[in-house]
Image 1 (cartoon, rainbow over the protein chains, first blue to last red):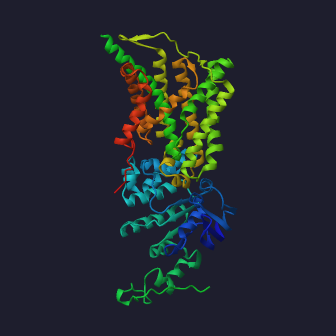
Image 2: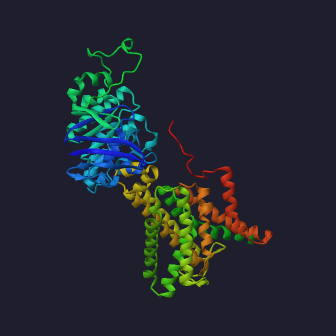
Length: 264
Length: 299
């Protein structure tokens, strides 16, 4: 469905962020993209959605294909019309608009009034808390409510592929669990394909079918989620578990930071 | 009722009527600013353009009003598109000072072209409304003031509803709120910029037509009315549509009152200066305007 082939991204003509990244998202899957800060995960999503353009970044090499068509170089609004919607990191609600206006603008690209109405009801079912906030200005919602709103808003476009950037960022553990449960539910009920970027690798690998691990602008490791969960290095570096599968105790943690060099 | 009070009421009524036109022109200014943070330094020329095109179509080409007015608005829309496509779009991403200066430059070009085409003589403007005053109680009111006020209020109400309830209006507000998010949802930000310029040129043209018929003639001094947009938007808050509607009327009344009462004392000229004195005062006391946002943040 989506294929990135040797993608290179440069910001402001000088800063090289993605150095030949390739990955593939199969229709109907949840694919997790994991990695440390600064690995280039968000940049990857923005390269796909075209939002890179708004930040003076460019795909300078390689190609991005969606449903068999090249989409690199298109404007973000055109990519959105083709069925890819990105939920940006940091709960970017439209603060001065009400909750319902936020949702309605999510369906901006659609013209089927009935379908929009139906999806609006469905989103209120997924996120019942939003019903009570319906006519409130979105800027004053709590963090969790805002995260639900931006996911709901993206769903209003009825995307074929939803790019989710750090939905767990800054939320309480219970809320994180709730949001991931809803993502899984949406995936099961609507068959939406997800490409999910997460710091919370444990959560992400629990719902994902396939995972990629990024470092320094490249994919260094990939495999089915079950395989990643079982890989010793992934367990140690991303899931914080020791060999025995127990949560690591602080007394075992070495005082120096061991860096993993991935062998190619 | 004493003459004094009648005089006062008359000043207020004409002030409200002219002020309403200021509100209309300021609406265009605020839309552009909200959508694209571009400060348009040529509001006067947009007014001038509308007035001259209306004059040319009505009196020069002798078209019927029902043809001439829509035609004027279409030409105004074209001007908006030309400005957005030709002048501002190539400057996206350039320093804000360049963008502001280019509006200034383009305004001069518009003025120059108008001057070359139709000369700088005062042109008679057709009276769109009868000039026979009627009496509102003891106060004589000229129909042109009443009708311009009504027209403006209807337009402002229509625009408010458009922004509040239509999907495109919501998309414009979304763009003003966060361009990147709007784009990620499929809103064409360039389209919104173009639309806001077109609305600005259209309301300015309407302002020019109304002012032209209030004054009975068009010449280049009409552009000075456009400049009143600045005190209005500063008073109302740069980003507040509701604010400029109220403050346009306030500035109109204030200007008329100072013209009526202070001009005889100072020997004239106060009327023209008064709005700008307000501008300075507001900047000193409430820089974000009466209704503007002081950038409220959720804590």
